[in-house]
Amino acid sequence: MPLFDVYPLYDVTPVRAKGVHVYGADRKKYLDLYGGHAVISIGHQHPVYNRRLKKQMSKIGFYSNAIQNPLQKQLADEVEAQSGCEGYQLFMCSSGAEANENALKLASFYNKKAKVVAFKNAFHGRTSAAVAATDTPKIIAPLNAQQEVIFLAFGDEKALEETLSKEDVCAVIIEAIQGVGGLDMPTKKFMKGVEKLCRKYNSCLIADEVQSGFGRSGAFFAYQHFGVTPDIISMAKGMGNGFPVGGIFVHPKIEPWYGMLGTTFGGNHLACQASLAVLEVLKKKNLISHAASLGEAFEARAKTIKAVKKVKGRGLMLGLEFDFEVSELRKKLIYEHRIFTGGSSNKKLLRILPPLTIQQKHFDYFFNALEKSL
Ligand SMILES: Cc1ncc(COP(=O)(O)O)c(C=O)c1O
Image 1: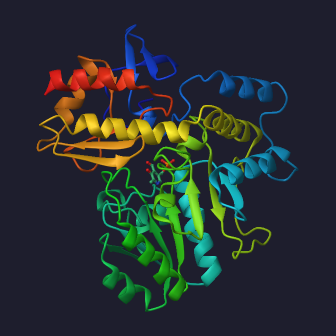
Image 2: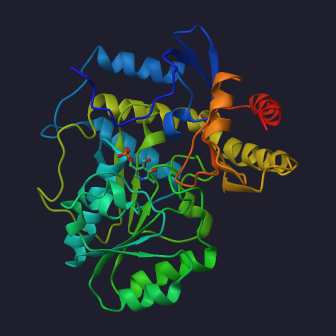
């Protein structure tokens, strides 16, 4: 049976990985500056991660959410302590789209409204409401297009107030650093304005931290750089270091009732252990401040390269913008220098999303390869 052919693939077959490197069936060693799309947070095959998962696997790997699972509570307490999001409630699921789908649904349950505001170039996932709030028309099927989503430009506070003042918007969903869209960020003033208008017109502010969360931006969540308080925070990717884990933090003002949300796989024993391993290593190795300082050093070095027109992003969620499309450059980096990088819907942007354990010497290797490839 053929595979449903929806992905253009590089000709590399990873068979093993360790730390910031991936090893191919071709016996070559690749530097992973893509992290499997911002997923690998504490590095491939981290011993704490392997130990926790193996130990859990030998006891119980899965049971549904019909029983007590103290690991969920342990995870909720640890993530609350590390993120500083005091008082929120945790609901677990298994992917980023599912997290956003639940966030949007919850907002609508809460204020009984149905429209959504999202931003130009946003990416929120591929499930029904999440994909409708994604600014890529070609991936929105007619079925999804039934959701009413208004796309606004970052910075357009006037349009936001006009839209929210109709009092029919359940949620404003925003990435504090856009991922797939190409690393654009709102200003602090705009972010504060979004928060204020959401409060004024009783719309929920949803921070999509699926890609930027769990330390990648140099703060636990990227919205924290802006000093706002979201009503719902969605997360996934780095939360599980490769294990499919997602979740939302729900503000205490939103009260649950039995059956309001649900999932078969979300929050299972292995998922909790994967995420607990991530939190353990983030804390022990100070990876969030490491991400912040290494990101600054990366930016300073990148700015010395003439061909780089702009350095975007923050922490270890970075982008280099050129005045040409980067697909050939990415091929050179992977096939000639054995470095994985990422692309985005901005075709001139090279994305850098390494494991948070990356060191300066790896970036030195990258910059040498980049200069040779330009
Ligand atoms: C900001 C953001 N939200 C949501 C998603 C969807 O996550 P998933 O692919 O796990 O469904 C992504 C995936 O790239 C993302 O970057």
